[in-house]
Picture 1 (cartoon, helix red, strand yellow):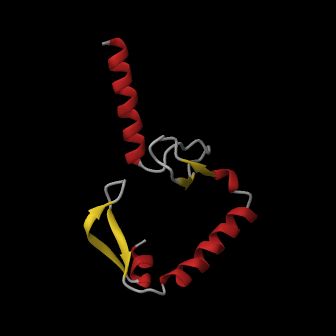
Picture 2: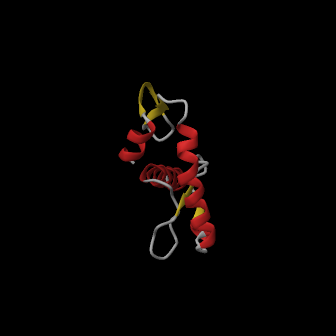
Picture 3: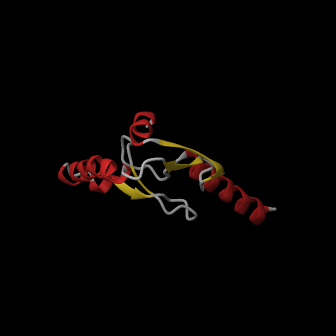
Length: 101
């Protein structure tokens, strides 16, 4: 990922964090979209042609709207990140604690 950021000329923004508490990224170069489009298109075609489309799933956290490529062995990955997984576990714990006092 660092190589991609370097090639595209991205640097961390100092003003804020995204929904996953990571620094927001901004591009210094206006022409980064064409550079980014080719590898993304190739990856999407590879997923479609390789029959891996079923591995592209929605994150199970209701507060997250992301899709991710499930790389688990059995194809049962539920969350896009450890942050979403932790948030869901904490939510389930709070619900149990409220239910059983």
